[in-house]
Length: 169
Image (cartoon, rainbow, N blue to C red; front, side, top):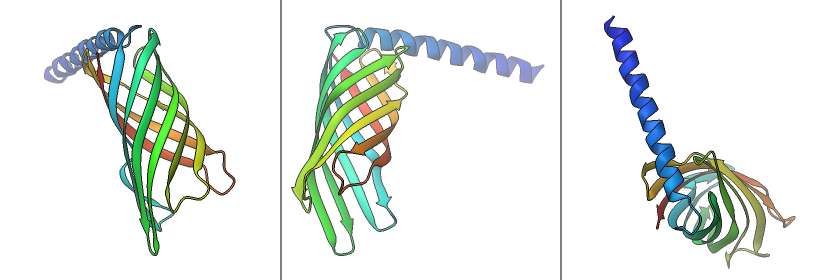
């Protein structure tokens, strides 16, 4: 009986949290709202083909042109280091993010990078999907999976993880 009661309390807690998350998401993603965020692809550090280490961090800013749909601009920094190879690059992107059901962010963007060790400059079309957790009505944490399809034959397509921390105002 104690286990049934404990399961009931956990279920009710989960339902209340989910309802609160949905309410906060609906408040944050209304038309006319701005968003400012920090992002990291590759979740900080990652190994590229077992040969090097890459880190990518940046900021993004956007405006909700419709409820749950924002236009985003982003810039950041990427460092890649391997034996005998060192790249420091500035990254940039422009795209659209839509929140399905208010908590499933789906993003499509054009992105690129320029810097030392990059020739020609990187250019890609990116798609991203994840989950938005809104602990407050003006803040979200968004883990996601991202896929960049290279527009340059000299670069590979990239599948990576990402996480974003967003402030809505």
